[in-house]
Image 1 (cartoon, rainbow, N blue to C red):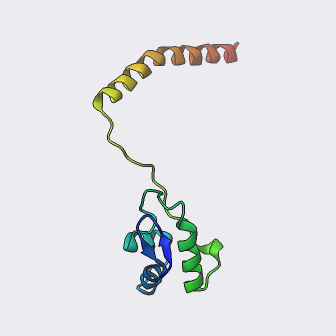
Image 2 (image 1 turned 30 degrees about the vertical axis):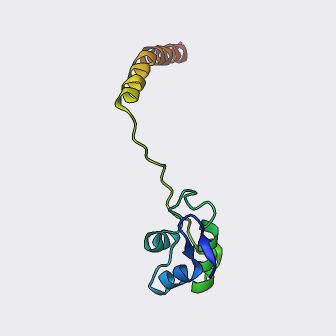
Length: 108
């Protein structure tokens, strides 16, 4: 038994079974067996999963597309959102003043 994804304890056999069920992409493998959904977010197993797909489907690795990357979502306290809005509103007049000055310089 070879472990492909250490974070989720996904084995090579599970990945091969998912491919035999019709999975052809890293994203489909991820959805079916959760390889790449652990703490490392696929940094250690993504390449291995691609190699297994390549081997099982007889395609070159270059034809196996990488998974969709999404930034992590974390809850943000509302006070941080308001602080950022206040900071941006203080900076906004300076930015527009600079733009206006550049526009005037270009017309001269």
